[in-house]
Image: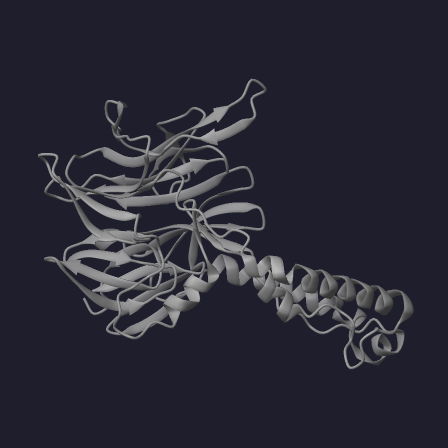
Length: 390
């Protein structure tokens, strides 16, 4: 089985214990353009002239502000995959081969005034979450055509569309509405419900609703069983508060901060730092370490130290760092619900069972047993792609 997924805004293929990055041509071309601009102007800050005038600067590594919004395999007939990306204020949908050596890509749709969420491809049609950054609605496209039809609207956000494998023409998705005050300012967002849309009759129905929970990534299998991720409404927030040790170290931290500021100002205006043996300028590495932000996933605040602890876990342990209150549920035709797995970031149904990402690993859940497939950091958009050997 070949697995396609995204991790840290890159696309990967995993097969036969080999992980391969599938390059995003849009990002590569963008980086080449930035490199070209940098090379044309680097004479201003490099060389003996720049050293003499004191404006010499160290070459900086270009960090790409790219975010992959969705991924879908196109299946046996069509081949390849479709990915969505946000880059430099623009959102785009591209189609490319799963062969990493094939750099040809086809642009499906792009724009500065449009945003994409996740999407799902079946029988030549793409169900996509599309709209603005605040309002995403369910649309249907037939790639490579850029035309699309929206089926939902309103002051809402609809995400994770999925073509039903049991009811032809039905799309499952999660939906939530905005709450506004008398001035029209958004004051909050409602719990996310599970819903489905009949693209033939254009009728929509919410069938998973509970004020205490959010429902994500609703899917079904060919037998009519429904699967979804359920978590407490709004996700789990950090419970860290001010500790006794923080109070004890307040004076020390204040003095260090004051000295650091004075040291910096003396360096800038006087040309010499207060502290010998240093440049007087901020330490970028320490600054990055101190300002490392917690990861927020669907409202869940994941502490950096918890991630590091999970990364240091022993090989073979199938533990992740998602809250255990975020669970994968199976709902059978008679309404019976079973929690299959706790601490789930993302999942995908496949012939062999269920592929599950817990944020640290991808596992295969089948017949009540779970086996490790590969380590994968924050793996999302899991897809059971076609094997290159077939």
